[in-house]
Length: 500
Image (cartoon, one colour):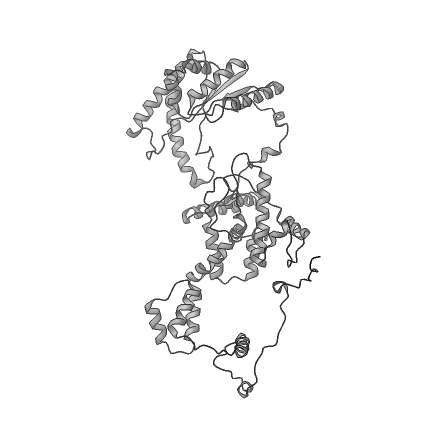
């Protein structure tokens, strides 16, 4: 038989602190409020009592050089300079040390040094983790922590703003910024991952981190099992999870929502917008505009489509099936086309097979197979690089390209955009060779198009790397420059191909 189970007592870390008697020894000097030079506070009495028990005594006080070095390293992380050291040695005032402490506490370096401990707990240096494991840019939160420490922010306020700053009435931008404490969870933006799985992983991380930081306990263990001394129950852990389980974490690269930050000139323009709206706009418009100018969040979230059923009943103009990417296998392309074809037949909506931009010769080969098999299939050419079609017409894919063009409904492209150009005037000499080359490529496209009996050529222009149209006044200049170039090219095309 084994040993009988021993009753486990309470762990000291979970006992409530109680008032204890300070072991002050009786002396005549104490009657007059005097004490030994070795005693500076009540804690020293406990040390003195233990020293007497062990037969030990206090060490001699450290010299001024050592004291100054210790306090500098403790408060700023850096040793004092030789000038500061000599100044302290020459200072004969009784409160010389206290004055140095006050001076160090007022320095920016104090907040920077002590913020490092907190930022470790806030996972500040962590990358996004998982598959891509890319870096993050949240230095503004770091600056918030430094400022809070330098301003001697009360600990309860320091806690509230980081855990729930966004829930405060009319939160300031700083209070919203403070909530970045719990935005440092890992984020998996790899395609095909289960969004709910990694959302819950983020929620659990927030629960565990909160208990580690504010209660100094490893609460996460009871997620699966309890420890002998831990006063936590399984049910209590998931009650805490329920408290934090009210977030929407998008497994996307954008990490939305994000706070917008402006430089001095931009902030002046933002303020002018708000001032104008406060005079002439309605309160609802002012509030929505202020929210828009404060945070950046997609109008439609990336996973919104996961909640849709029978969305085809909205009766779109056409179904666009984007295939032909060289990293898709033929069978994958075939599956996509067949699914889109079935949707087209069941809904009566035309199907467009959109080829992949750039690699037109490859896409044309894929398209030829499907165009021959599916009579109702119409092609939408996606050609961001004009040379792709031109070179394909001259190469071994000529037959496939001609078939593709004969079944083309429209061409999706960007018009006359020159990557990396610093000259925004398309009539400038720097643009001549580029425009001439573009016109050669377009001649080949249009000529083939006309031979097929087509009388209309539809083109689409894109803005920015992902097609986003900037809405703030100070971000529209780059778009305006690109628009000038695009419109110039479009006018050339209209004149050149007036018969279309």
